Length: 288
Image 1 (cartoon, rainbow, N blue to C red):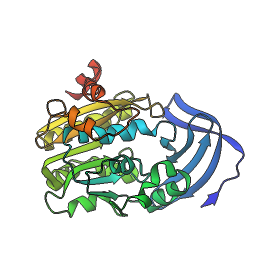
Image 2: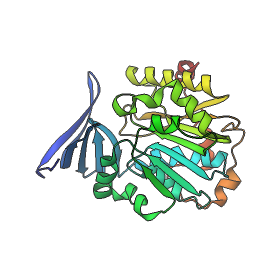
Image 3: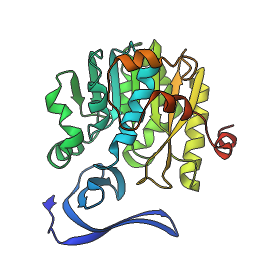
Image 4: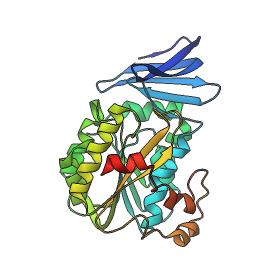
């Protein structure tokens, strides 16, 4: 592990064999290889600070609110009575931060396999990670999310959010049918599952998206997909999955109740809630 020479460099993520995403003239702040992955922190004029895992960009200070508002606001606007939440992954703290804005939530458990992600984000990106030390409802567990779910009693949580990396390396086990079945068992009868659902655009992401959706439809009576814009993710078009034992995210949307929470958002709103489930025709066909 080491602080990096602060000279300017370029960061490039390879999206496809002939497509790269680059940010020029960034400061490389820190680099560390853990037993799980390579972690790097950078700073740029346009995106602020950002960090990568195994060379893939996870978040930037500029637009992380797109992702974190959409992964949390949608389920809270469908079941505003959520009290106990599990976040699998989410070591940067952004998802826990957004959940902590809901004073009605009683407990937020965050299961992160790599403690170094949390500790380094606390140093380099407090914008998202400060919640870990500031909210006593947030509890950190440094362990394998797959094993954690496997050993849970039934109906432990009202909301489970799978805030994972892509289905490779540490995130691979979070995209299996067995894992989704364990999530269903751990959810209350009113429970909702939200998962990072990949993208429909490039082939490798599309295949994983289709596999994840098929497994969710086999495990839950309600399984929908909604989309949001994340400029720094491959293609900019990214998806979340919504799965539930009983709630439909459109029919059971409760805009008035959500508005009474008084949450000031920059991306999510009640009109967008319904609109984000309206998918492009080619995406609908891929999901059939």
